[in-house]
Image (cartoon, rainbow, N blue to C red; front, top):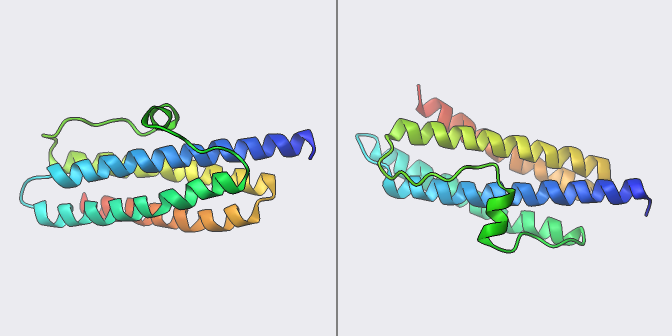
Length: 153
């Protein structure tokens, strides 16, 4: 493989591991908000957050396996996830519901951006399988962003 090919594969693996980190961090935050949301919209948001968390965790193994299929190691620990994610921790369990929704919307946008990086890197590396599957992940992120945005109106 050429140096260019090696570099493009490294960029793809880095983007995939970043998406893996963001997905795991966003999953934990979404479950946190699922458990701690309160107020008049409790039931609706509690269920929405749970649905979105389930969707996120459903992609974790797929992302990790794409890394492995590219011959590289995945993230291995909470520390490696923390170092690779762009999603910030949120430990305030008393946030208002709208603040939770806004934070999840914004973090899903970060994940969406990261998934677009995966798409570009996959195409650069000639990895058609990753390029194809990431389209589904992008669509899921767009749906989560849409639902959260509509909830704020």
